[in-house]
Length: 103
Figure 1: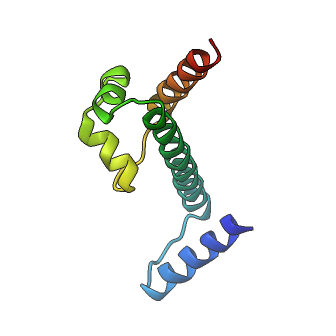
Figure 2 (figure 1 turned 120 degrees about the vertical axis):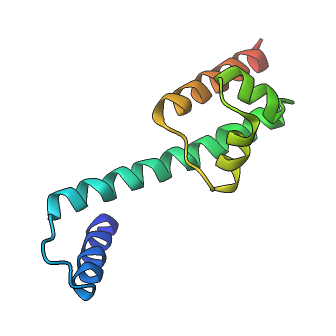
């Protein structure tokens, strides 16, 4: 439902701007991709918070997933969104700290 509203709002905006052709399928895919990245971002922020609660620094997290410390900060601040491969690496770190806590 939210996706449909986003799609209709985008189409209305494009019509207002007198965009001649609207490819509804491409627009729909772009909205889906955006929503997926927003979900990735929310999950990444939660995992980073868990890692920090376990005593990890941004530098250590960044080192372990091969990104810069600035990238971690940008994810936290919502200025950037992680790609799936980086989210997967964060998920692995989460599993790692869960294993340490259970040991």
